[in-house]
Image 1 (cartoon, chains in turn red, purple, orange, brown):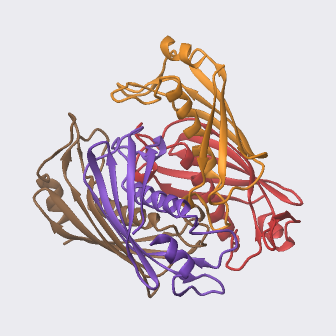
Image 2: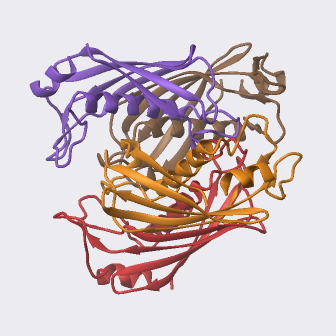
Image 3: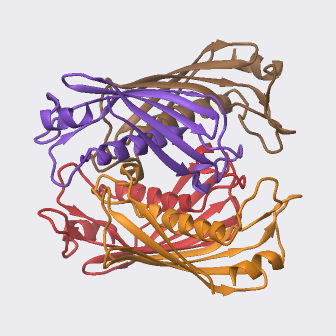
Length: 131
Length: 131
Length: 131
Length: 131
């Protein structure tokens, strides 16, 4: 299955008054890596004019060590399961040799127009590139 | 002209490693107050299915005093100028008797669909309620 | 165990280009409700000058239905487990009769100064108020 | 005076329900470029353990064109004025040949500990590297 490594530096706006990155940002780091993986496969999760989307149905994170301003991190994202209508990803965030966080997210493929959203099969041209 | 007072508490995710609210949040506090003012006038800046929008063309803020977690703030928002195709707002954020920030923003009325965005006259039913 | 209901309106800055609230915001909605519960118990997770903190060690969310701009939501937060050094919360976000999301988070009690952070027992004056 | 160019891609979490980047993010793009400029000069605005900081006293932005998911942008940041106790920056955000936004921010140098914050002269080792 596809996997991808994505480097990033911690920005000041991502820290909180405890002096560390606010935990809600970890989900964004994970998403950024995932979208970069799609681009590296020649894909976009949301190309202009698209009528399909990939909303999350579940997310989980375990936080192992805090992050601080200007820390250099790497997120490893992997496609764990490619279902008929869903994709499950796993993520590992590290800073050098230190494991910072691990997580998973599951997204479903939906038709966004016309409303309401409705689950559809993952298009084969996407599935084949993520395999 | 319409004016509105909006109360709010500072959330932890809005602070940064300097122990104070990150300056980018002030624009969101200002926008929240502005949207609450629209609601109080029986309006929404983005009702479901609408094909008009109000993107910003300019914003400015002066920061007078820092904010901390759980500070209780009030934002006073005023319609300063109601132009044919634009609205200029002013904002004053206070915590008790302390002036925290002052700012202005200008939004233009646009037709969002079909693309591309194009400036249009402010609908009279909106203008009359903001006056 | 303590539980608390917290009402909130969806702000525009919380939506994304899919027209719905970005999933990372759900963790912030959950945290806002949790901090409001602390305040209702006469507590703060981060009083000025405090040298203890409550970093997250785990978070999980299931997303049942999307949220849109100006949706009125209620978050029910509950203390599920009060451990010697940790607190596990559960959260249910609803919009009227519609279940929007459910989640859990676990925080540990740490001494933040002097560095590095170190896990400590939950102070009894906090534990007794959260029971 | 020092200037710096900083490249960046628009992330999905930065867009809003109008399909474009929420205006509050422009201030963060500007700050990211500024902090990258400090790093390129061998500096950090907030090194670990530092007791000086650079809170903003003013910010302004003009928005010329919208940004969308995965747009590649470049921010040019310049030190416009290096005062005894303050720094004024200017910023220009472009996407290819399209001017997206222009802005300015002024930060003051403060001693953060012991509280309260107090304005101090810009340390010469910082001033000399930003010149």
